[in-house]
Length: 278
Image (cartoon, rainbow, N blue to C red; front, top):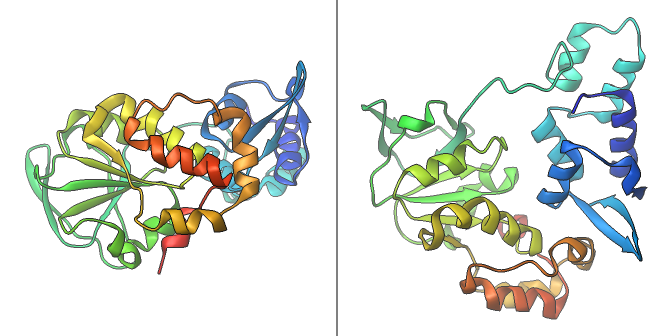
């Protein structure tokens, strides 16, 4: 979908908390946002409206390279717009959506010997840095390494402060962003076990089921912290209410998650994974 002033105005309205009719929200972008749970569907009889859920601006910034919606709109409406300002606002001097990089971001808590194109490489990023795996199709890690997928950027940045959540084994941590699908393709190519760490809510479970479990089955599992029953009562009712129209009747294909889904419905809340950063 082309980035237009009309599109940006609608995104800004959603980001500011406005509810918009379905007639104004059509196209690939909005379909993807609904699938990702950043736009909630509200049903009024035969009519539907949409509203943004928490994290909407972050999703637009990460997925569509528009970190500042208002500035991007200003640029489009300015006939004398400067290209450097376009880059600052949209990440693209021609203001077109295009994919320039393939691959995914990875990190570790201890060095891991891996290989790319058959050549050995050590994955051991310094504090405050990550490793970008570009040639992911040839990227291989030892069979005993657990791959941990992390949804949110803050949790990925502070994996060391969440070490207590994970098993005592070697792990490769992978960020869900950018949302290119490359990581999902890679994890289906290898045989390593996978652990998904995301928000403890209906959308988070849907992400795991649709992006990971559908590809690798029981080789993948969803992280359910031991204390989630104590934390969920203090979670977000707004998050639950926003996600319920879309995910309330989702088919939970991984029955290991049946009890967790029942717990979420029981408390009618969702819990953000950032709450586990110590």
